Length: 417
Image (cartoon, rainbow, N blue to C red; front, side, top):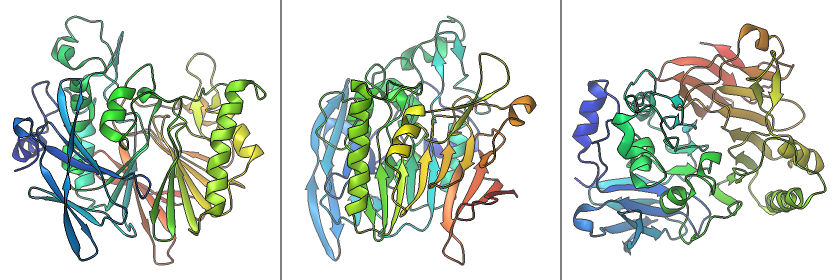
């Protein structure tokens, strides 16, 4: 079979409730990343014998061959091709990935990697401490037709403790093996069946894991590290999903008249103008750093802190058009919903890395219009109710529904299940 070494190994690992071990390797994993109509892509990682497979694409009733060209990331072969606009499914070997014309069931999650950095140690081999494999298993049961990852795939940067770090010494740094351990292997059973929309996170910036993000999860053709990537516009009938890269934008305030803020202002302005001219009637914006998110104060008295003052300034200067219904983000490691005279803003950053918790004193300071759910690893499932309104169900690492958020009824968006 044209996937992991092998799919049955993944199943056994799940059934045994084991976590990812350094020896686990991906072989022949094929997946689809959605972007603009003419930049969506298919990739196969580490093909058998180093030879790129042939893909078949379906457009309507026509099926044609697609040649995958060979590239490399680190010492690993990456086979890749751009999908022709209008592709409805991709077939490689025995695997078929269907691209939905209008997604009905969407999973959103982010911040999935296992945090190893200096003195900070998250036990990547403990499925209770790093539950990404458990989350992937739960998401498999959702049978989603689209998955949105809101960034931060890679957390295995460095590790100081010679004893604790010994099991991970071969999967630290920014090369292929850390990417394989932190994302490709644990996510393989989702990647092989469901198209993804990949958002760049701050862990994928130019000082950290951008090369892997570029070689593995972005449209083809990016040979250097940009301050920000081009905004992607993914169309699903009347729904437009806008992938806006703000991964490298500082959370703290920039000089509003300075050169860096001028650069970001132009990047943001282009997105707003493009949204205005597009014919789609419903728009979702996905990005990594939240616009209206709250973080606990880690280095002082109890407080809730706005996460990105720069994005808030831009959104105030150039408000989103009314057809922008939702903004989805990660970066904060919990789940939040905020409402007001703006699009509903959802943070879903509980995909596996260490969580951000709010103690009782901090919770008392959460302002009106913000719902901060208790921190629990998991994901959100989006689907429409009988009134065609989007509902987000927040589920834990086992797939148990904890909260239901009526996102189009902002007066009381989330209820305990």
